Image (cartoon, rainbow, N blue to C red; front, side):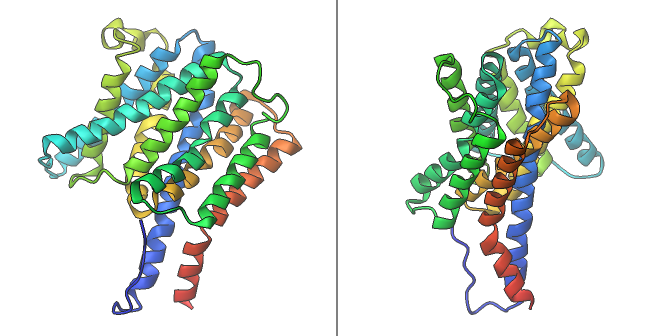
Length: 318
């Protein structure tokens, strides 16, 4: 996706375009950061005796519930629901299925692999997004996007601590699931900007999360009738639904359409720094100097990816 400004347009249009891209980048960055709460939530839910399938289903259905409540509020304020074609609904539900598959694979990987190993493999989505961008647009990604992705992957090796252990000797299925989660995650972020429908963000979110909920029944078919919500999983369900689905679906839906697909996945890499900070605060997991260095490298890669937009805004406001 290319962003160009015609010379026939007034100069006042240029700053707004640059600012919109900067805002979109912040929205995708915040959406990625919301995912950072998930690793800690998963760990706490496992410690409380719940399975990965139960957590995934809780995340999907509570995300759907939050969007339904938001839609009801909007409806009470006079906003009408849009009529969507069947294919549009299926595309949105497909997005939900993708993000649910990511959760299924990632949750399972987290249950049998050390968290740093699972995180490192998941974070391969940063460069996978560039691959999807190349396939879909038939244009190679910009050199700066490639450099940014390489820097982020490099920083991930240090921030996650995987440089100490490597990847050898771990369960092959767990490694495959973590890598598969990276593939589906990159597809979700990429396609979030491609699936465009004329409806409110709340209505869009309901349909996306409904797709996720239906997909979750594959791994936890009795979730809706088991009564698990009343057996202690409710706090984890609320956190997982809000930070693991509602916020990312909303923020990616707002920001991704205004960014190249590859840049969207780069900006979504905020997940790891946010996850490390949350784990440090909630679980008391310390961050050593090398891990802090890795976080700094990741953030540097993210900032590097935003240089063109920053220059465009500064040059037109002078």
